[in-house]
Length: 123
Image (tube, rainbow, N blue to C red; front, side, top):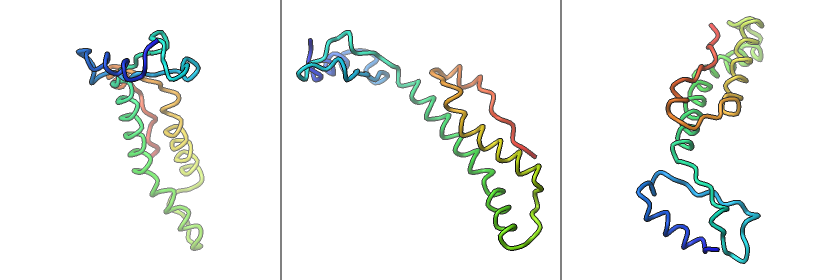
């Protein structure tokens, strides 16, 4: 058993210290000590790819959400919406696909990120 500080010291000695994240499962903590077997290593690149995926996803949502707001404003104002119901349903489906995208595409590498097939933007 090693203390958390001892484990971090070992990681800092590693050549890849800046590229790894230690994940420690709570059920393996005993009196503030951690068994080495309970430490799993996950590369930061996986986290970075997921963060990049979410960032791009958020940008795509923001890029089309104005159409939802315009539609709602036009309806609330008693105007005929620019987008008919069929177009709006396509936009809502696209937004939902983007919201679900990180969960349905658990990527861990840049190669996987580069191979992603994003939902198609409705016209």
